[in-house]
Length: 139
Image: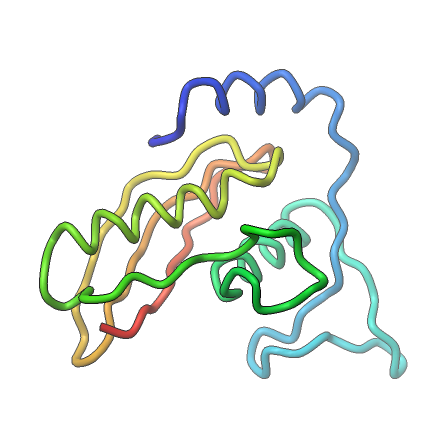
């Protein structure tokens, strides 16, 4: 897994003291909060961390005041033109996800070009196990 060594050590040390992660349930098909009896509800652990990862990879920094400065994934221009742009996107994904103490590593990147899009698939190591994840970025 690609992760700065100091972050790996901090994540390992904090795993023992981290509370159970919670976030609002998401209707993945429609990209909205999932409702139960007409009300949003919380999910925990692995499912909650999936929500955090989803939001971190699809939020552009400085877009919403609800998020801390630097939260989210900064776009990379020229993705269809150079391998360096894809490598920069990989670094930005790692940086975006390293903000969570529940994530212990990110790696196994693969890139697939699809018309005007670049599909990036990778593995996220978390305190709740590994998750296969992907993000689509416009080229």
